[in-house]
Length: 170
Length: 246
Image 1: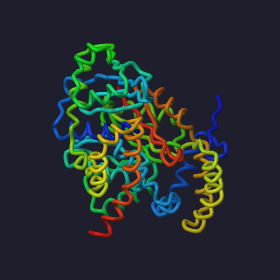
Image 2 (image 1 turned 180 degrees about the vertical axis):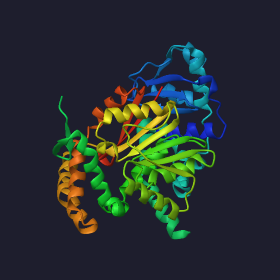
Image 3 (image 1 turned 90 degrees about the vertical axis):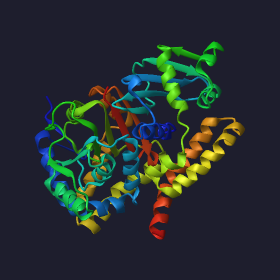
Image 4 (image 1 turned 120 degrees about the vertical axis):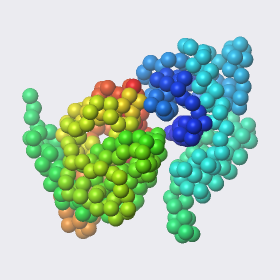
């Protein structure tokens, strides 16, 4: 379930026109983290991205990297530099990998705004607080994925609270 | 060839199951939403909310909700696809479809089409829909493989199938509690609230006869979907399967 928020964010950006998915149409790109149980396919099709844990089918490009490099990539680290340093392994068309990485790096979003579309303002505000604390939490945590999971678990539980709050106050 | 299938824990002639299921839903239609709220402690609303959020449905999409009953998913889909989109609420049961129509009108939701259909024979052209959903309906379908193949056929390439259904929990504690609850409490509540013990006994039995998460995932893949994954909800009591046509 940890890829749920990422899928939501990416598709929100596609819907708002912030991402052009056409160059990646009908491409499947697999991201595998060597040191963590995170192995997902990004399926770009029908003008949307599905992020799924089913990796049994063929993918056009396989990207293999460590968790640390994964986060570095998200923070804007250059893919070519990481390739030169052998910190990332790509099987398949590097250009396609680069296009997906560009998209992932563009997920520099106002998380509150994205989540308010799905969960209401109160939860979105909480998510914003999580997002603000996220960078620091990741730096302090020995397992960044656990940090993400904890944050997402809170988001999955709190919509009920949000709805009750809204009903009481509006 | 064996011409029997299961109806709850009973074996019945394959051609009889459809009528038996119809009888169940004719009986429970008017109290369906109330019973869902009571029996799931309101959790069915959260499961459906998660299903909608997982759908990646966008403005302008075409959606088919199968076994849509009282229209919970159709209402949410209608809001997501907007005026340029198209939502069809379908059900094999006329009484359930009638409740759905009434529910949508009462909520001021228009622009949804209603179609009475059998999930095994979908009256739509190939590659028509961006998303097909079926919530708590697949276990009542006589030939699930045929229904899944039909769903695959009418989805566009890149279309998404969502199956929200009762499933199997791995937790021994939860399993014991759930068994007691579903075979003792549920039929009793069905008797008290809907004056229909048998239908809720069938509900409990049909859940046990439904394929588990991995089996259903393989059925979805066998139907032609390129990818399928599932997410357990409430400890696996319910699972959302998501298939993607490539």
